[in-house]
Image 1 (cartoon, rainbow, N blue to C red):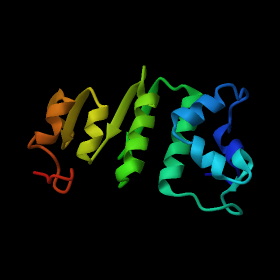
Image 2 (image 1 turned 90 degrees about the vertical axis):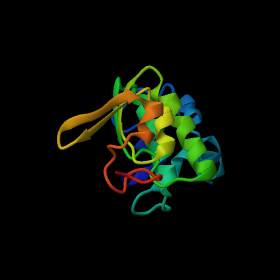
Image 3 (image 1 turned 120 degrees about the vertical axis):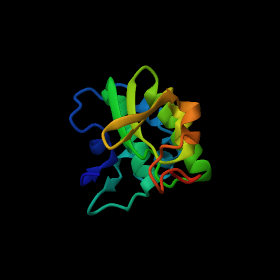
Image 4 (image 1 turned 135 degrees about the vertical axis):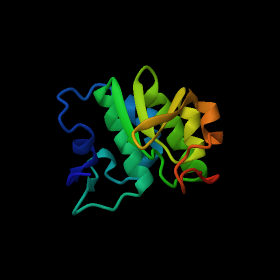
Amino acid sequence: MLPGTLHQNLLYGIDDPDGLDQALHDAALDAFIRQLPAGLDTRVGEKGPALSASQCQHLAIASAMLRKPRLIFFEEAGGRLGGEDAWAFHTALRRLFTGRTVMMIPCRESTFELASRTLIFRNGRIVFDGDAADAPQAKQWPKGCLETGGA
C-alpha cells in the first residue's frame, strides 16, 4: 500500500470512481470498511494502521476489479490463509476471475478449484497439461509444493 488513504490507494490512476462500492462488495471488504472509524478515508502506510495480509489481498482484488483487466497474473494467490479468510478470499477471486484470463502459480491444493486448466512446468517444459481437478494428483510437482506433498 502507498502512504495515503484507502480511497486514494484503491483509485490510484483511475479518473472515474464509478463501481467502487460494487468492487468493495465483490472483494468482501464491506464489513472491514464499515468498522474503520474513517471508512475509506482511513490512512494507511507510514502513518496509518497496519493492515493484515488478508486485508491487503482483498484491497488488491477490489483495485483490480475497478481496473477491469483482461489478463491477471497471481503467484500463490491466498498464501497461507485459512478458514473463513480463505473462503472469503476464494469467493472474491472467483468474482474477479469471471470473464478474464488468469495465470496463477499455486502451491495449495485448495487453489485449484479456481482453475479450469492446469499446466505444470519443469525445467522449461510442460510436464502436465490437463484438467485442474487432476492437477493435485499429478506426480510432476516440485518438492515441497502442495499441502499433500510433492514429487
